[in-house]
Figure 1 (cartoon, rainbow, N blue to C red):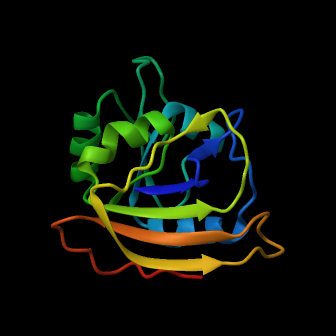
Figure 2: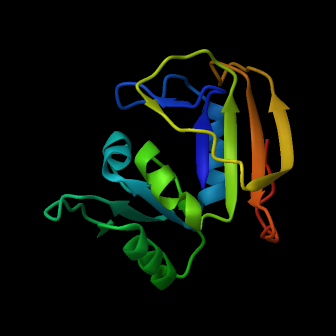
Length: 169
């Protein structure tokens, strides 16, 4: 799972993120490149296209919804099955309903804590109760970022972290 949220859980406002984090977008690309992104239809619509170098699975209640280059599913179970068939690491990337739906299946969370008091209409609750923090790196605001952040890596309790993706600053 990859998520960016304020300490109060805000992840969006009017279908967009209420901040600009150019450095975090670079980290997102580094973490997810070559993998499979699992997202809801609203999140996909906000992006507008499949991201290069990654497969895309979209969960949608609308059986008629489709987009070229996207695998469309209607449940967490079919999303997991589709990700397994693609055979690449899968990353749940939003939105709020999808985070809630997929959290029981997630073994690792890459969280960008956005140090902002931004208000929004989309929030996620704290998702880390069943996880251990294994890495954290606080990053100051730069000319590429509208606010300071903290990149955190969490692994589910009683699991072993997967090797491979280092935190890149």
